Length: 159
Image (tube, rainbow, N blue to C red; front, side):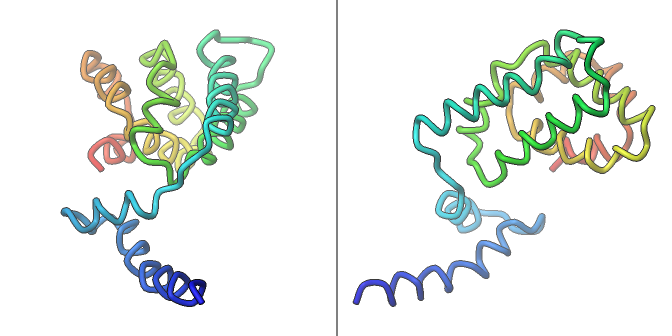
């Protein structure tokens, strides 16, 4: 039947997908695999995720003093982890309109510098944000923010 060739094809692509996720993979083959391997969402799932993303940023962007920083960050991180495997266009759709970007990045940098235990998790969040051109563009205009960023965060920008 059809199931065997399809599952065989998936098994054949899995090692390539793992190679694609490694930082060394690049080029047209890696780009094509990224498209094949990336998740796609139905419109209703995408809209639900967009709402969840917007709500997760709200306590940070509005500086809601009723929400503790660790709790706000934890919620944001969990929601952004749900975007894993989405292509850049979908990430742009989800994250491109979130504002104020500079203020949010500043909050994350302050949290990273104040709460060392969150550092690797914050770097992971920045790695996701930096996949979206609008977030990188917002950072371009604020060199003093980049200077305050720990080296690990600046490294995430370069990836």
